Amino acid sequence: MDDSGDAVGWRPGSITYKTNPVMYYTLWGIIAVLVRILYRYKTAGRENVPRSGPVILAVNHLHLLDPAVAAPAVNRKIMTLAAGKWRRNWAISLFLKAAGVIFVRRGEADREALRACLDVLGQDGVLALAPEGTRSKTGGLQRGKPGIAYIAWRTNAPIVPLVFWGVEKIGMWKKLKRPTCHVVIGKPFRLPPSKHRPSGEQLQEFTDLVMMRVGQLLPEEYRGVYAERIAAIEAGESNALDVLIPA
Image (cartoon, rainbow, N blue to C red; front, side):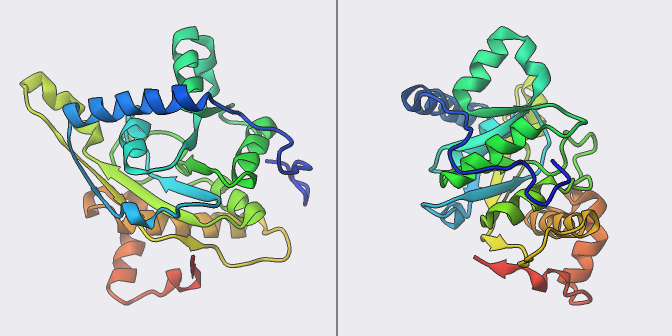
């Protein structure tokens, strides 16, 4: 992310990462079948994903298989982020490119990845972002990073929370037990409008709101650092989420 007001001098169509549609849908069709073999796969809220226009999917991050269990629940092509380290493995890199990823350099401001994210949304695409950045070691939510709020502010794209749990229990197959994977999609919303570039503190606050909406869809044991704030909202002791705008 750039610190300037215009961020990257982005314009729609200026940069994009494209996959072959036939390869993409063939690949994800195969993966969807495999997911339903590996898991008792249960979904809810699929109707909450807008059928057209830009969409940001805000997801939690539990396992390397997260994209595989999320994609079959969404009837649109999804672009997502992957750590740049996977570029070094030609086989994994080839697979990820076919699956539709934007490689991002972790731990630094990756302007190229940011441009690609903005371009996906500028072309009315679906962009999946895990605000936590890295997989949770405990299963509970970690504090989200402000990148998702910045991208949402730049594009005014609606945010759709999408969560999953049970994907991390793939190891149950060692005991010849088939785990259950749940995927739940919440209703779309937008962040409060701002004419001026939000400060870093405001972006973090907006990201925390996104994460609380994500956490509301998860069982309590998966809510992590947001558990207390979500509990206060559900008990009627906090109205923090009232500033979010239904989309």
